[in-house]
Length: 119
Figure 1 (cartoon, one colour):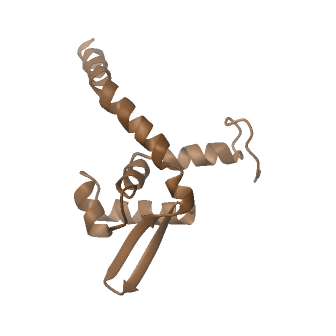
Figure 2 (tube, one colour):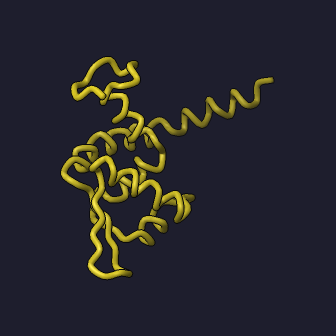
Figure 3 (cartoon, helix red, strand yellow):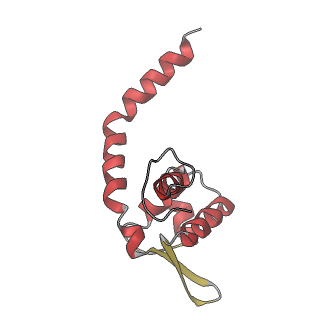
């Protein structure tokens, strides 16, 4: 695999890998959920509507594998997740995307409804 950024269209480009990781809807929500403070698994389930415990566990493991999230276990039943330094570099871009979605989400929903209504 390449170690330097190249054309994002190439399959072995690290840029493409990074985009694939953070383009997952659950990954972005988990990263955003951890942006303010470390959280326990159950807290993230409650915070992120619609995510199952299984999918959250899979997402957290994947984000750990890529160095974006770290797991802290002080006792068998006390586990907390937080962003790594690398994960924190994504907070600002995710906030920008979230603000864009708040500003333009209604327009997107309107276009989607219109497209579905058109035969």
